[in-house]
Image (cartoon, rainbow, N blue to C red):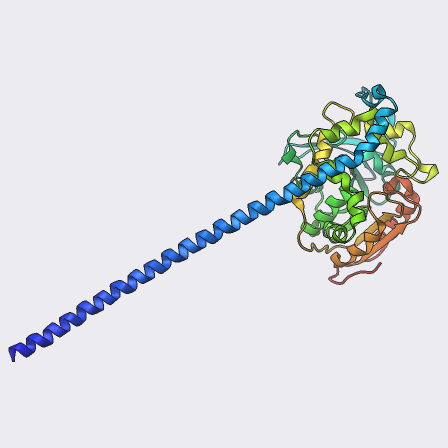
Length: 406
């Protein structure tokens, strides 16, 4: 009897030991599984990071290879310039006095605004009555506020029109670091300017680089843009779509790759006393096409003056040198009424890409291609540009989620 009790007790004891052993094994397996999960996740993270680094390295290798090819493509033209006269080619001078048209109050009052957050000081020219709706004008490269003189005159009736010198341009501050010209920083400038002027929203107008900023700002801060007007500047995602399917546009945009290189672009653009700044503005094929609006020597100097100053070329070029860090990979929807104006004879950006913009605007959208007009649209055909702008601004256009029409 005792033997049986001991047997039963022994069996219970052995069962208890077996349960404990299995419990320990279960815990071991769980711990092992957790460790494996940790190690696998770490390994996947390492592989992902390595892949991103490699893809990033390959991307920049391709960019700099394209940059060198772009430099080679400009070499024959530079050599022709040097062959015409080496001393003339390598001569450029710093302008000591600004042309009178650049400092005149004919088109508006000059002023400065210092932004509290960044400490940046911006120069601007304003016309109209303060308190009227704000129209903020953003210029492109290699321009400054003066490119908006005709719009400053036209829209002073009904708006407080402000043509600002973007950071690094004109009379505005020009930080020296490359990272001071990242897209996020430039967009913050626009936001700070609107609020700094005492407004919560504006009619935002941009041309060329200013157009790129205007498109992107309208995407990020649509509540601060009542109307968007862009001239000869593609929506970044639309440009990405278009250029992949049209190598001809890639060739026309090769200067963007050239500008990625250090020092060389500054030298090239300075040759023959800034010939490569002057030529795109006044040349018969690239420059303003309207004979009545072609730039005088003084007006041309208005765009060369600041660039001719010591170190004046690098800040504007830093816009381009940060461009590939802002490479759009997905659609960016615009939710405000938009007017797109395009010079038919733009030699830098093909007019055929204009229809590509439609898909990214989920609000009333109007696009106009102006015949016989160059890239410098608002200076080339100001009467036509102003007329279309005025009509667009006079229309009742509630924000919509539907596509507009061309």
